[in-house]
Image 1 (cartoon, rainbow, N blue to C red):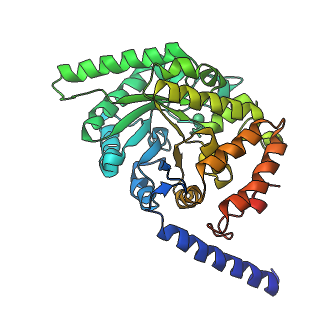
Image 2 (cartoon, helix red, strand yellow):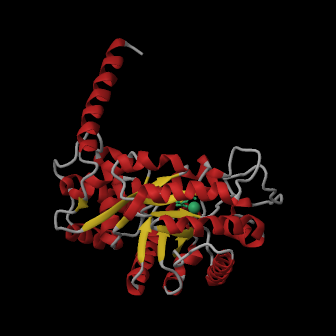
Length: 359
Ligand code: PEP
Ligand code: MG
């Protein structure tokens, strides 16, 4: 690069570092809005040893531990004992903040070489995740047993991915009860069953969120898959990436219904897809009533600061306006226009500039 380009980018990088350091200095402070609403911001991890890292970035516990990564890039499946050690370490490190551990979510874009999957024309809609686990109980049972044993050591919540309907939830409950009874018979002290929740990431689950909410202890909204399946865009396909719009009215309606259903049933609803960690969407999500976010470590301090800079009643007004608009691009425009004034100067433009965030 030319010398002047180099200097310009070096200055930009320096301003970013300064803005970032200022944010990180407040990472451990709670995320409470200007009008006093506390919002929980948790972290997403893929491996057990990332726990300390996300907590250092200010995450209030683990909202999503993608346990499938323990099964990937190795020669044999992890046995119950190895899983137990990993899960126990995560829960113990989180203490009262708690950790949500998601059961095996393989298939589609996540492959485990020693789990033989049938050749399918459309693996994204095939035998994967919970479907595979319910079919291969030799795969699922050791994980459920390891999770139950680890739950003795702290606030462990079990979450299942890729739920499409009620029968699957009931099948998981039956299996969990069986594993629980088995462990008790073996003399393992398990005073209680941990909370059981589901990922709401398929349109069918979103559409019956009111029914599912009566059956489980919590929801976690997986926007990565929910957007993929609701808008029919492969999340790894660059040719249809232009259709990827988290603020599509269809999605906002789904999110509203999921959050209302959760509130009516009195269960916790969090969001752990990428949308939760993108500060551009924070105001809309607060307006929808979301009070639990989970995201990658580096996003935690940014989203926390955005939350501290917002007023929930203003977010609700923004959402009401957004819900009247017919198209995703109209809603994106509205948000990019309003967000700057709503945030004022409370967040460094070097770290997050809502104006330049979207085209
Ligand atoms: C999601 O689908 O939004 C999600 C959090 O899970 P994953 O990205 O692992 O599919
Ligand atoms: Mg998913």
